[in-house]
Image 1 (tube, helix red, strand yellow):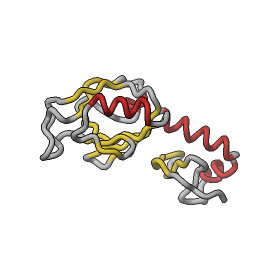
Image 2 (cartoon, helix red, strand yellow):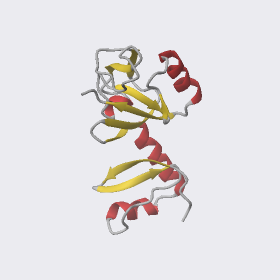
Image 3 (tube, rainbow, N blue to C red):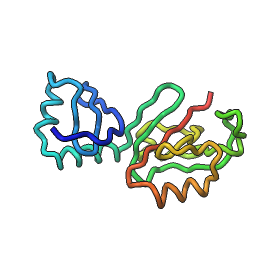
Image 4 (cartoon, rainbow, N blue to C red):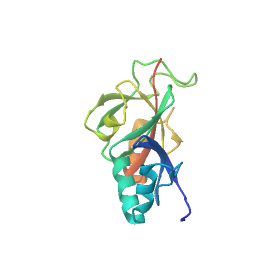
Length: 155
């Protein structure tokens, strides 16, 4: 079995939770049909399926925050500032990066991001008090094709 070096998010496939990895799928249980199917696929095929699934916009939500792994282009409009409640006591509403438009057919829209959500991290780098132009430059020039974004839902 190959070593797993990166787990991006957990997917629900055929009713079974599977970690989606860059190199292979590793099922949590080998007792069902979906994991046996995944194990039979060649490694390069598993990688391609994994990238396609991430690219369509999958997410993990814990109630307050939503973590999405999506492929560029995202299909959203971001603005600095907004009418949402501040999520950080040190940040003002003018500091926040807020989603103002979502394309429902875009990768972020399919992942469950909504208008009014506040961008709090890109690739685990905080954007709470960051400038919008710096964040957009970071996404465009320093992030891979599949990007991890974390949003906070306002109260």
